[in-house]
Image (tube, rainbow, N blue to C red; front, side):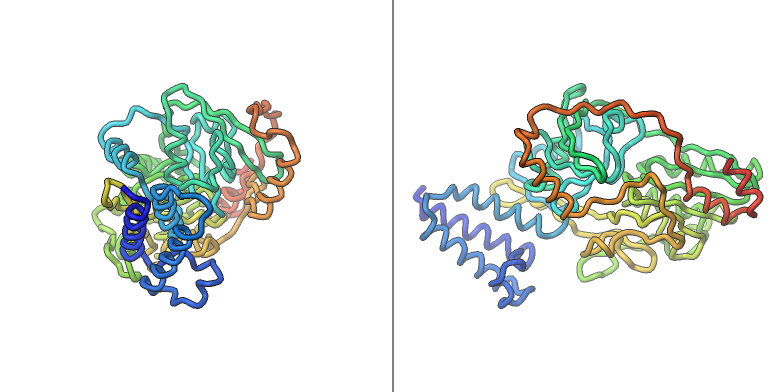
Length: 435
């Protein structure tokens, strides 16, 4: 096919995608300021102008297939971390993994913050935890791939591999020098729900996941606590990221007898689904306090949001991360695909947990309490400063830096749990329970 023929195909395919998806991603360019933001036609004309310059003025003959793929990746990237353009091969892999998947991961939940891969939470006893990865870490490189240059979907795929294979991660962490952590991929088991009794007839339920089946386990554990005379519950949702909205609704229903528990919000902020409490599934009428932190996201935010919005109890801790979306795969011409966010999870009041602005995302606790061992999140400026420091060092990615064995330290006081106990007990009981 001639160069001009290829150029025509690229222009048409990208133009169609622009119209089909949204009105452009070039709003950060100065010339964009003169164009109507939501006018898809105006954005296509801008893109046509760029392509014309590429055709007429670029120094070499460009690889137009590469140009098209890059443009479509940019379209998806301009939406949210969870939307992604997939090549034809990736679409096949995506569909195949729905039925069979022999690859394993490292046991952590991720998102993207300021273009970098961000660790929301790390599963207990997983390969990631054993290697020293922590919630709040920023992964700058996966092997030799800069995470700021790839989609969240691509990053997740790079972390998958054969059992016992190794992946090197360049990690940036607040208050520490950049390091390369080697993680050995492998299977791991998500811990089961844990419970314990505290003074004053308080039961603590520690949740690690809200995947399918977890709600039933939590119900059984709550029933056992009630039989032991527990009258107050602390529901620990800290570090819980993985899960399903239906499981989250089932858990919220244990504590909330009636009314709405969650919503799914579609285009133009229209409610596409409402989850109402089932009185027959309600189990516990006593006082409730939920614990959340920056590692709380997705399904766990559904539970916390329901408790908060329905004024069922206090939510103690730190603002949650902000996630909870639904994606749909749209197959494009040639077999490529667009994994597109089509809905967001929201609290009963209709507030989506993932907002357009990072600062507006998540569940804000009714009582904020920070833990002394919680790292401060890295800002973009910190990342840039660390990168500049690394440039002054020869070949910073050459050899993985082993994680030193941590020096045993006394566990810091759990101030969030202590506050929850204070809310449910008198001060004398709380002091005794915290010993």
